[in-house]
Image 1 (cartoon, rainbow over the protein chains, first blue to last red):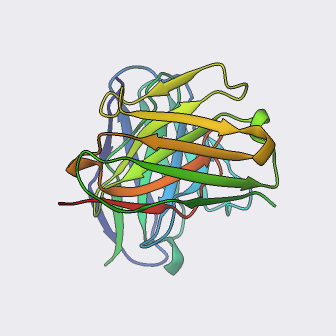
Image 2 (cartoon, rainbow over the protein chains, first blue to last red; image 1 turned 45 degrees about the horizontal axis):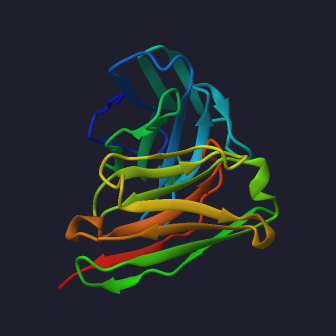
Length: 107
Length: 114
């Protein structure tokens, strides 16, 4: 099973700042990595797929990069609605696995 | 418009069974792999099971293998999760999701409690 480790566990920033979230895989997942955003009481929402492709309707301030074992989700300038929990997920191998999440909170 | 609507959750005693349903609209199940993913209260996401787009393959997390079965009814465009021999640790919100996954339902809550 591929283990995904996200860092940091909690990130405290202010609106307008830049956010950088990390996801590291225990084995290479090529580019088969996705990022999800989850707000309290809601289902996860797909942000990025295949490491660097924005899903439909996702604003351009979200970007993803990386391949192999190291991946980054960047939010260029935080909006109030961006404060949420972010998960990475790999679909390179069964079972699909998720990272433990990064809680992006308002400073 | 893609929509996924889960149902069938509830409170059940350990050792009992429950069947979850996920009604899909806006697309056909026969074109996509479909997943069940769960989230225990206050915890992260755990992938549970997947069925391939043509129904020929199923995969399960080790934690549910032998107890849960994923299936689908193409004529009703509905996905199912049969959960047997439920344990306390199966308590979670259960989501169905399409494809990568890209679209997710809103979830149905399963509580296993004596």
